[in-house]
Image 1: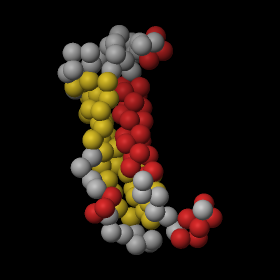
Image 2: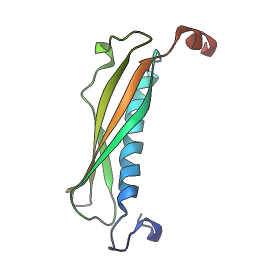
Image 3: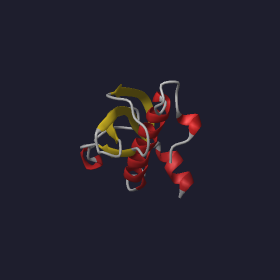
Length: 117
């Protein structure tokens, strides 16, 4: 639902509101993936937004990543970067914004994992 505080002076949804939606959607994807791979943890290190056109109304966000945690081979002191691409679409399914969220993935130290159990 469109709210007046999400609009800017150009009568469209504010750019940062779109960026927030893109980052949140990528977070849902990563949290779901990390839930089944509790040996790893992640944090956002970079957010890049490509604004394609102005938008109003209902916005739908879809995140995708072709990364497989099974392929991840890192030690405790190493990190891997995963880029999640989120496309934001208006009611006509036209892409209005593309958000690239870079996640830094590291292995959870063994002593921290043992405390959780």
